[in-house]
Image 1 (cartoon, rainbow, N blue to C red):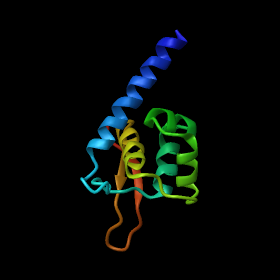
Image 2: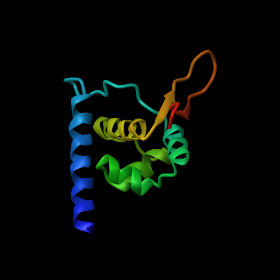
Image 3: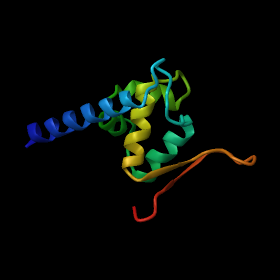
Image 4: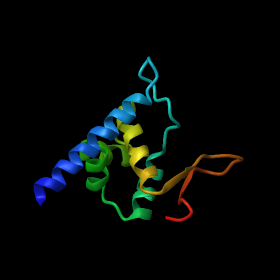
Length: 111
């Protein structure tokens, strides 16, 4: 059973990586709207995910998530795209800053 779960996680991680690479522009700049480290932390909290679960689901190293969320370093564009994608797939909606208000997160309706 554990082998089946690992195979499913690996397949999901590959799909996320392929999706995130497709989001990049030719000059390797992130083509999707970036997220803030605080949004990542808040999003994980909303859905009850650990940094390790986010990293595993996104197909990236846990240190990438940890370093991003502590503002130690920015992840590569495809890693950031993968983080955003898996959180949105899990039901998180990212709210951009506007009219003097900061960024935020919320759960999509029906989640």
